[in-house]
Figure 1: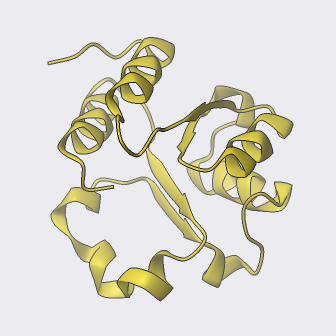
Figure 2 (figure 1 turned 180 degrees about the vertical axis):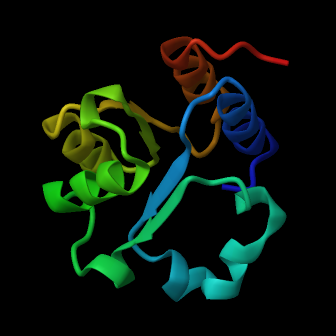
Length: 121
């Protein structure tokens, strides 16, 4: 989430009028709730942690809850994750889903930009 390219993608998406959110299974557990008070997340339209909703990715209810929190239909969401199971879960509810390679994230961010129609600054 703090990768400079990820932060730029979130910022550019918001500036292009897109709604931006995060869905995580264990963000609070691993990072603590105060982590999500960071300025990088200040403009998120939604932040959903499994700890708050009682279901974890790849359960379809997690993705549908996040879509509801964003007030966006699943078919209009570009979802990125670094685990194949979670990407598959997002696809099962109709989201465009991109697998992020943790060792080379840029191709995934470039694909997301393309799907969102958000250019690189």
